[in-house]
Image (cartoon, rainbow, N blue to C red; front, side):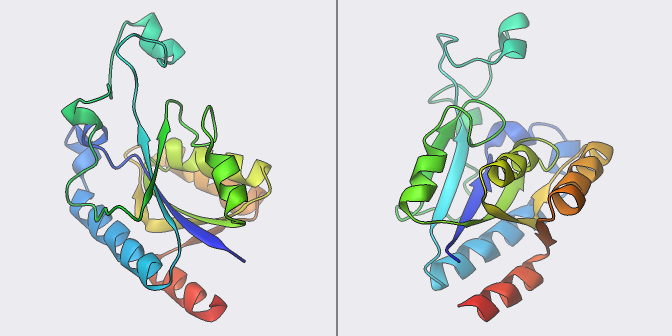
Length: 187
């Protein structure tokens, strides 16, 4: 199996309130551990960023309905958190919807690298991370959701999303320690 680490939406805007920053330092630390493990094992790393154009051409229905702009190109709110270990070897995917697969070349890039397993981390488990997991399954990719490297401030929605991923789709939800053990046993 060929794996990839996918870090989703670790951008300033997603941590704009206290409840969203609740476990931010632990989240960053857990993601950075996975980045180091991936580097050591030569696992490709993708940083996924949500970025919109000011001209509204990429805005979703809710943004247009309320004339609400967010995550605009070049803005501070759209920048990757500086504490996340990022280097030029990591590929960047720009998305404008919750799932990384929607309106991007993400699937094509995975297929070109013969990837069959995605290790997902980032925010939010109930939203972009979870929807990417569901869409990965629908495209016949295996998913490992990194439990301590993902976060949601909406606990009931997160619980429901995790149930779908784990129970209905029979994908893995593992803690970092379990992911490292899994990778050590499959390399």
